Length: 425
Image (tube, rainbow, N blue to C red; front, side, top):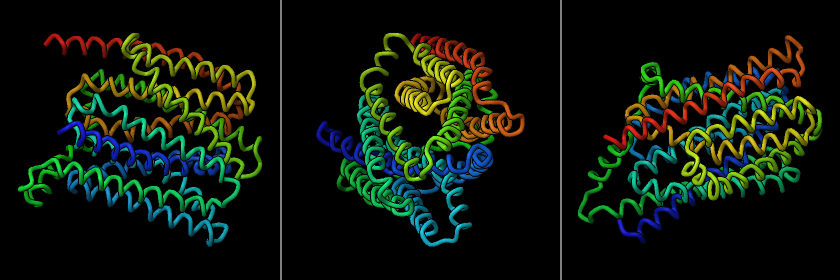
């Protein structure tokens, strides 16, 4: 592949990811508003429902991946999302009050599913089209395109959230997702142009099907994790990430519900939080993440997020103000996306390709969404049943976060040993 054709592929890939995360950044503040309206008690139930839906959705998606050519998989998944958004908009506009309430709850769960599968489909295609060597050079540039889309979406939503209804706002991502599909088509066309001219369409379709990586089922993932203490350590780290994020998320719903009355103003606030988060994320991705990993290693990079949560929970234990909450949310999420996620991906570079794919279903469902659900039940029960104040819960969490910090340090050191062992072989 020439540098010119490679450059075109990167531009179309970055443009596609731009529209994917632009769409998500428009929808996400709406989800946060739905969560804040219902309060902690409703969030407990929605977290459990999300977990159950993920348990069903991930294996179903794995079956589609194994059976459909790449370009049809992309079209079906994103057209399905667009149809869902249209239905949500219609029911919020014309449904009865009961229908609108249930639509809001369904939308909360749906956004979590959308976030997982939209990005999963995108990166699966990137893994198919680009080699490992190309990925190391180009994935950062492509990811920056997505972050730019997220910044644009957050800024756009913050400016129009109080001027249009929620049902109208939901129509905008339909258009941006369709623009993203057009970019995906141009990307696919550019990739196909790199094949010999005399190759038939049938052969291209077969090659397309072969490029789809085989994914494992949930049982395969459980078996892989239980058979590898290293993968189990990664799962433990990610469980802590999700649990801490959920605890902070529940406090966001509680504090914003009382501090901001108007629902459209809530959406605007969440859009501003997303804008600040994504802006900092882009800075961390471009200027800090690579430097931290090269100079200080994976351990230090993994330890930063627990330390940020330690300071956040300590601050909220002193004062549960909207200002402290916003600072905590922006800091935790930007560090998570900009530093922790790249470091997390490095953890998987020392395991076999089979382990990566076959453990993915388990990590995406039981670990990530299960961490959300379990932390939600614990935090919600302490607040609603035991009537323990959030400030007290934050204080109790501090020693647990220190344990998480130590686990992050040990995990990074173990990755370094495995990496050195691979280099020696």
